[in-house]
Length: 124
Image (cartoon, rainbow, N blue to C red; front, side):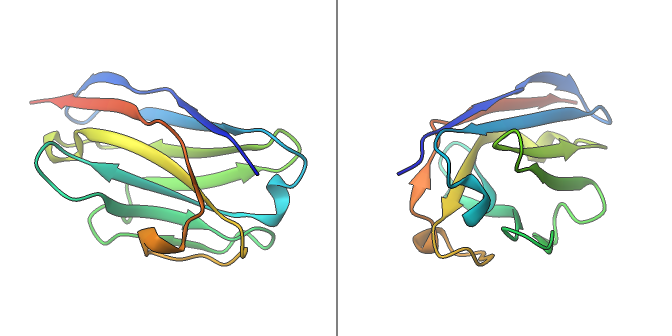
């Protein structure tokens, strides 16, 4: 079992940057693939980015490709989401998630553990 705690959200102007962090408990963090998802009010939770457990393979939603970067530090049990050139439509609660099978996925149902989320608000 793993517990996930996100941090780093906040209010930023359009064009600005934020770096989200997700700290994981437990000694098996390196065996999990990790993902970031987001959910805006009245909308379904959607995939943002994911990273493989070992070789650093990453996947991104089309809407964030070229602006967001996912990375992980297995020594610190932490996954990051660097968000640049933020847009008002990026405003949402951002969640990190862990896939125990270890393979990257865009599908919510393949993730076993979820954090509580961190709010990101981008003003125009």
